[in-house]
Length: 67
Image (cartoon, rainbow, N blue to C red; front, side, top):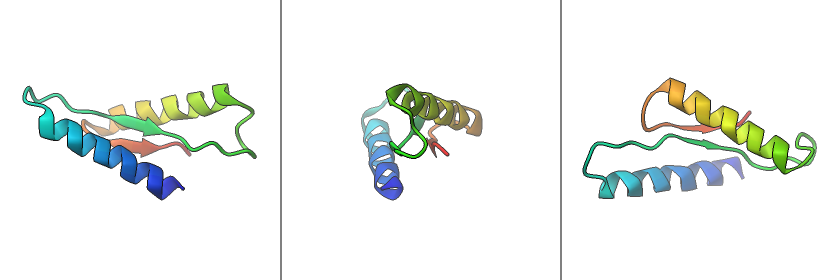
């Protein structure tokens, strides 16, 4: 589910921050495969990439879900 994917991404972010000592942050864009929307892996990757760039624009240490 979308909620499950977001929880995993947020846990990854928290673990990264816990071990990071130089102030580096992690922005993540996630997408869940949707048979009605995604023609294949290329569409899924494009949607995740778009979500990543939204996360980067939103600020550091952000997780964005593909729409």
